[in-house]
Length: 252
Image (cartoon, rainbow, N blue to C red):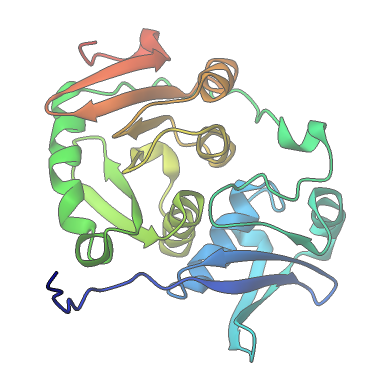
């Protein structure tokens, strides 16, 4: 039997500690890029702050064990941090790992009231451009990408990570830093539409989430409750609308 040496790119994953006001922390596993955006997006999408303006300085500090991200937030928000999770362990696979109880895990954001309508041409245009944003995922095959498109489907921001919820939080952090209102467009992900992604999207006010792959039943139920338009299998010019059909023009 003959063997051939092959050089291949492998995605990086390291422990990342998110620490708020030096008092509360969680540890997640993430690709060690754009960690400031990750910290901002996580704080916002998990409801630890109501709005990005309540987040102050964010500092990324390398440590012997991984990376630490030091986040300053409005002291009035610290009770939310403590209620969400104190010194718990999360993974790159699940944004709910480490939630303190079932109520926290099943948190349903306030219902969206936007009358945003998602046009099929916009979804098709955005999804066609999504592979071009996979600068890590292309060479490694190991990264998810999340992106934000305007109402016409032009991609404006994108972020990648080994974990789909980390990629999504990095994207939200970029929107926050740029002062972009989530209601001015919609989000796309290269993964399935899991419950935590639907939950994060509704929490920050994104009116629609489109996924390349399937959606879970739990995600569909949350989307219906929160008024989030949820589209699965959005590829090849088609998509399956699983929630929010009243505001969706996409053929199903």
